[in-house]
Length: 217
Image (tube, rainbow, N blue to C red):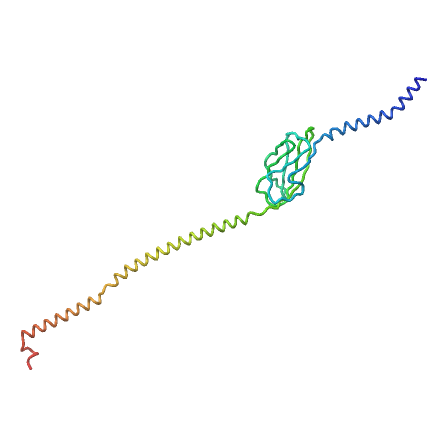
């Protein structure tokens, strides 16, 4: 009878043993998945709109990821990759520097790291930039430079014109002094002298010949 009781006891325990085995297998299979690191935050946050270009992308994890080929790829609206440096692991954070000349638009961030348990994990998020354009400042600077150049050119042209005018005036003055010689006055004086000489000569002749034609009456 004891043998039959033992057999019945073993048969009664079989369902419980099967259940215990199934639970143990489930726990063992779930353990590696539960050990994976998880991302706990990003900077910028997913869907954020920024008015200034951030210096870097920061990913924060629940445990320290391994420094094994971390990847953070940032693309703009056209799909062009805007990052050209390798991200670094700093404790619980993975940091990806950003260029300073990013313009307004939507940027997608795709990341992949190796968690502390050795399994790779990945994910993605996006953010928007709404930064002021700098073209206006550049145009104003260019206009100011152009105006300054134009003013300098105008001053130089005015100086050249004044110099040329002064030279022309000086030449005209020299020509005027030559043309101002009183040739008419000299000619008149010469004629007067000739007339006086003629009168003197005539008077001398009359004095020498009082009976000449003038005194025949």
